[in-house]
Length: 85
Image (cartoon, rainbow, N blue to C red; front, side, top):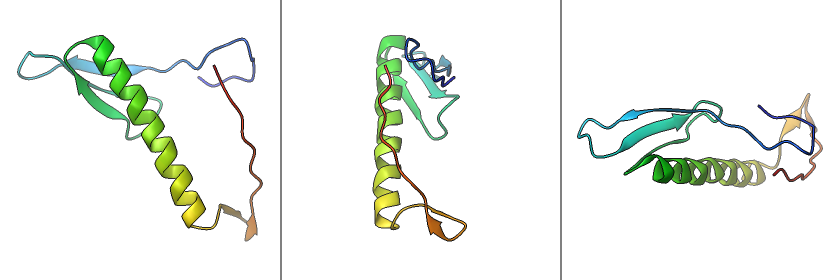
């Protein structure tokens, strides 16, 4: 859920299960395609999933810069930076 209310935080959903070896958890972020990881416990899994999410964001930023930016109807799209809590 992403909202324009500055007082709210970004809320993500983790889909997870115990690993086959029963030595931790595997999971992915339902809201961020490609963000998947594993951890010895749920805290480690959450931290690794956040790292995976930011890695995806960084890779997308680099790809966009290397591709010369996003085009909409043949014209360069505008960009705006913003922060969220």
